[in-house]
Image 1 (tube, rainbow, N blue to C red):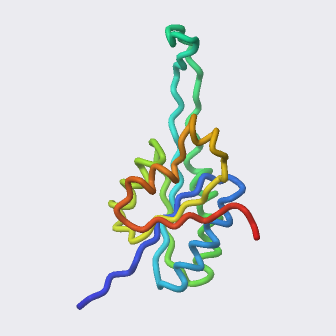
Image 2 (image 1 turned 180 degrees about the horizontal axis):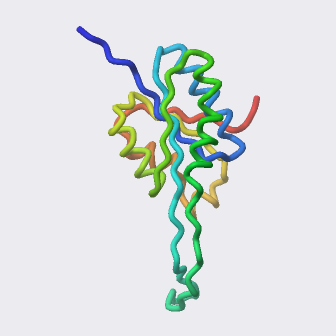
Amino acid sequence: MIETMKTLLVSIDFSPISQKVVDGAADLASCMGAKVVLLNIWEPVAAYVPVGAAMDVITAPIPVEPPDLDLVGKQLGQFAQPLRGRGISVETSVIEGMPADEILQQAAKTGASMIILGSHGHGAVYQLFSGSVVTAVLHKSTIPVTVIPVHSK
């Protein structure tokens, strides 16, 4: 029987916790002999935002510049290089979409055996009003999800 290489899908957003998430993924990949797919998702911003109690007032369009994909690719490359130096196979990918949905779709597309995310550590009030990518992925994923905590020991 031929065993295929395991794949870890690691989604980062370039926030201060991203390095900790990549470091944790690298440790897992080394132990498992797994390939890492580093993923960055840029979320489109709505051009119109409803405001007001009745949600009947619409603000003027907000000009939104898409990110410089070359720059984002270079940033991902900076995270990937130390992993490659450790002998870990790394691919990078930048896509547009809703983060939780795209993470799950990319996991299926890449044949990932695990998804690795970082938790920003927002409190219950934040979760109540805005939800969480981690929570959405945990609820919908059919493969294991590892969440790297942001708080140090």
